[in-house]
Length: 260
Image (tube, rainbow, N blue to C red; front, side, top):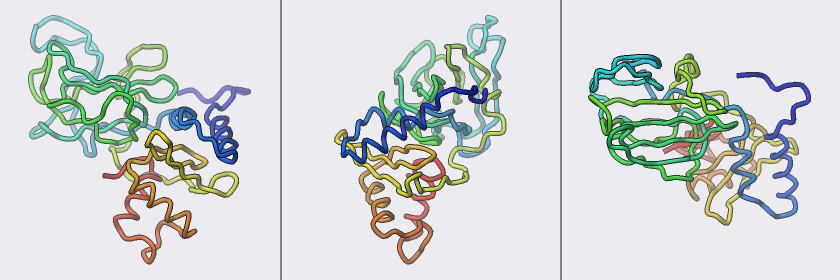
């Protein structure tokens, strides 16, 4: 990934500035929030919360069903007992497509990430658990490993498409990335003007705005959890204010994942 060019406008910072100004005026365009949430370089993680071996790599291969020599545009992951195991989003984004292809991907979902990156997850056992247009966090559950479509056994077929439309070797992107849901370094919850903004939009989506990211909140219960932080002016890791489950949920959000 290339560093920002000198003089290049940081779209994400600009959008966060617009959000801050608009919040002060009492007007919150939801489209700006969604854009700001995915306006930075993706933060990658692996598609599972544990190590799952690669069984077929990106590149030329003999098709296991037809015997023809074909280019394999993704990476396959599988091991014993993998059927039904949760597949996780490799970065935050929005669901671009959900579908089924009997002679191809089977049940699949495609996620659009920041700057035009895309990921595709194929051969799911049943339809994905997310719908088109849904916002997903890094590590969020998308569906379960299956063997639908053009498949010889349970596995995840993962594809990554870079801006411009070329598919790339997923392992060239994910090598060294943490497992889905692995602890990260939480960003500060204090914005440049000393506030953490909490928003429940008219579209029924909650957002938490920090200086480092805009995060979609999973439910009204999680919105109310962060509202208690703001109202009490307390740090998240204070057991006299928040119980252990609530602390785990807060820390998960601040690490860039959506808790269960």
